[in-house]
Length: 166
Image (cartoon, rainbow, N blue to C red; front, side, top):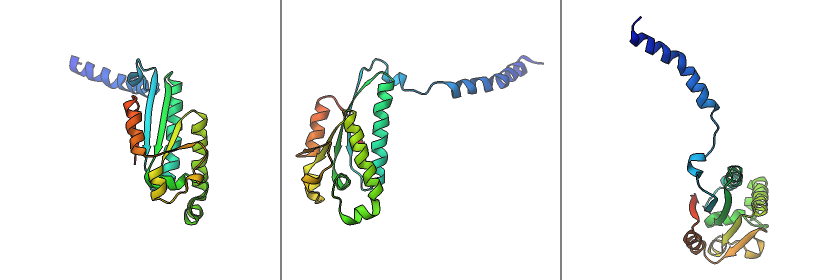
């Protein structure tokens, strides 16, 4: 047997071991988080679909937990703009309620859960006016701000990293 064949045979025999190690390797964000003590993020949420809104609020909650699990203090702000504000009311319009009632309840629950985690959540007054959402009906846990874009500029100026979700 030639050296070349021995090397090939060894590689073929060892390949499953390398693959098994890759599968069993812990899944984490250690490389990206090395030296990071605090994760400051500002999420810009602008969706037309309540299901997508509920889905991403759950992802943000899990991201918060993932940072904490990896010993990084999460410090999040969510800024809701555009048509998303329609899903953040205690009195959504009738058609929206009829079509997406369960999803709207899930969104309200996620907003409450994120508030309990200390996530600041802001809703743009320009958007509530444009989409005819009375400010007195916004969900508890949300802070009404004058302009979501100005808020984003402010948070980014304070070192928060923008995570746009469209």
